[in-house]
Amino acid sequence: MDLCVVTALWYLVPLYLLVYLLCFIFADADFTLLWASLVGNRPETKLKGLVVWVTGASSGIGEELAYQLAKCGSRLILSARREDELNRVKRKCLECANLQDEDILVLPLDLLERTSHEAKMKAALEYFGHIDILINNGGRSQRSLCLETSTDVYQALMDLNFLGTVSLTKQVLPHMTQRGSGSIVTVSSVVGLAGAPLATGYSASKHALQGFFNSLRTELTDYPKILISTVCPGPVQSKIVHNAFTEELNKPVATACNQEHKMPTSRCVRLMLVGIANSVKEMWIAQQPFLLFYYMWQYAPTIAWFATDILGRKRVQNFKAGLDADLAYFTKPKSS
Ligand SMILES: NC(=O)c1ccc[n+]([C@@H]2O[C@H](COP(=O)([O-])OP(=O)(O)OC[C@H]3O[C@@H](n4cnc5c(N)ncnc54)[C@H](OP(=O)(O)O)[C@@H]3O)[C@@H](O)[C@H]2O)c1
Image 1 (cartoon, helix red, strand yellow):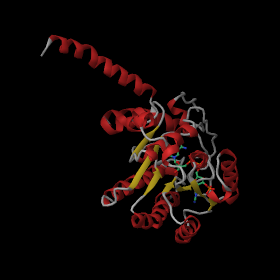
Image 2 (tube, helix red, strand yellow; image 1 turned 120 degrees about the vertical axis):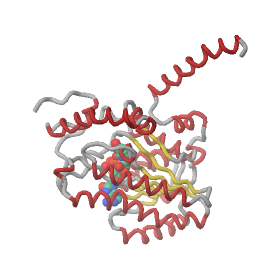
Image 3 (spheres, helix red, strand yellow; image 1 turned 180 degrees about the vertical axis):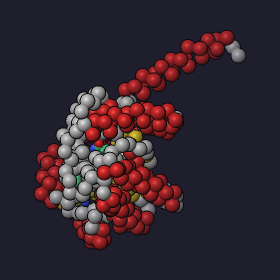
Image 4 (cartoon, protein in one colour; image 1 turned 90 degrees about the horizontal axis):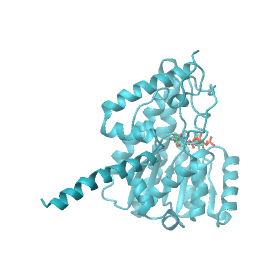
């Protein structure tokens, strides 16, 4: 090989690796998604005018999805159980975006009431005539140790996060296969890819979603214009911990949850919309060091197990001491 080429490689390869490392340190999403955000389609151009059905639109990620989609010019179906909150979100959408009242349908829906989902789908179709995108976002988390958790809580988590989502998806999917196009985007979690203490049931329900949608995608290869996408956020600012299941069905979460270290909801949602606009099949969205864990789980699981065992122990210690378990990654638990 020419000496000049060798010399160039000698300098360029380390430089490339250094740039890659620096990008990774500041990354808050997987590289496919970040690349799409740099050079891909903009949500404002791809999502304008589309009919998007968002579940869990009364709070957190779903609420922010409503605002950003409205700003993109999408027409919206907003669903969750609390109609008054959905109306509040609708009013705010109309304030912040150039949409008319009739562009947003408030459609209260309980994911647990699976027998109602057919009627909800009919109501959505009667109103807009078609659905372009379903965003399965509604769900609840968990904050409890397996040893102390009632089996009813596991049942509730699977009923809500998994079966509720599957049920609505099965209402919308035939409509999309008939039209030959559409997107079904499901908000899973980092714990849909890996495990985490205090979330055995939640993690199981998100793993179930990952398995379901990864398999569904392989069944739909005859429909290249139907996108099945899963979103795996790390910690994001929302009411998720406040609303989480605990040891018993109706027992509220006792500890306050610090939001400071979590990703801003607006950033998470922006990346989600970029992913949807660019047909990204799986999105990892998280700040460091969580993103590093995604990559370790994927490419170096032995190291990931080692690290998560250490951090998991801290998280359990914090929880047992009545502290915010999420801070285990950032602060030392006080001795109880
Ligand atoms: N925030 C995070 O750190 C994080 C990380 C990874 C994944 N996620 C996922 O992101 C999604 C949204 O969570 P979030 O963080 O935005 O939490 P959130 O603020 O608690 O919002 C949850 C939403 O789900 C709805 N919901 C709960 N039970 C429902 C039911 N039975 N039927 C219909 N809707 C129901 C709630 O509305 P109503 O109470 O009005 O029904 C609310 O709009 C969830 O799937 C969660 O697992 C969140």
